[in-house]
Image 1 (cartoon, rainbow, N blue to C red):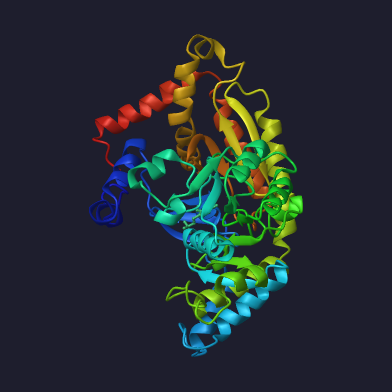
Image 2 (image 1 turned 60 degrees about the vertical axis):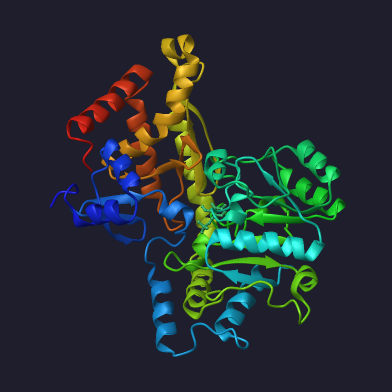
Length: 455
Ligand SMILES: Cc1ncc(COP(=O)(O)O)c(C=O)c1O
């Protein structure tokens, strides 16, 4: 069976997203992934791929990790209630206690399932605890796609069709302390919501000291300092939480993605007892936030097993070491490439920024706007496709297509890191002038067009 007439492709196009399947067809994607384990994926033809995306940074333990599967099996077998909001629930209490030990003084936990929901619970908490309404967020930020989290979405394209959104949310430039200071002086602010690294905006790492100073500014103005570590948390940056690099303990810490052990949706907002009490500490307010599946038993079992696995296998240190190998290896192999503007990141979040440089040749000098435009629209997707053909899964940042993000499972080996570096450097090495790259991209589109853009 070819991918083109694979029943999954037909059903997905008919019932889930025809436009997505069409886009993949235009690119000549041509595969259906059917199996996953650890750092590997397999397609419908049995071909193996090294996964450098890991579910957009949500599979810190890799695909289908045995320890989490066993913990979920055990939870299924033990007969405890899965959902219980009529009294104290053991699985939720146990997970909350585990999390409390990891992030002092944030010892209270609001559970949810998706990252976006957990962000919204942090926004609600901030309003309820401070009695203020304004939320300050950063340009480029990505916090989810619900109406609340879209209100603090830094990508115009993603939010525009859904406006008007939650009022009194204000954007400032990421990494700019003066802008933040001004925003805090202008009005009473309930919370400042930031990511320690903006992955979807193109793996943007703020200047050293930014988070710690932002925290101090928040406290000077009575605002809560909220960090969204949905993608950076749980070891990915080489610290259990990215705020630890800067000693910038937040008032509210948002976790999601990897917390569910790569198989179940689990997210939370952690905060201090004092803040939680102000918002929900009275009997007439304790139920102002909640949802049916918050703290469900299977998710809690998966999350506890995840935290144990991260500690037992030294995955935080592993992320730091493998991340450094990845960053330094890419920097060394891509140094001086005419279309690599930089390689940056921390731990196992690394971004390769593609685009015109001073060495970019005649086209870059004559038509810098065209080259920049092509880079933004085509470059990252083209490289992702070439990598796919070479047996590697990777994607550009969702709001910045000229940045290829590399964020494999924290269980990735040195050898796998070296293979990834070599594949990226080899492919980019073949295209040192834009004409060759555009010719290749054009030929692919042409071939797909002749084939009717079939998948
Ligand atoms: C930093 C950050 N926050 C929040 C979210 C939203 O999480 P979810 O897709 O689980 O709602 C994401 C998703 O990529 C994210 O990267």
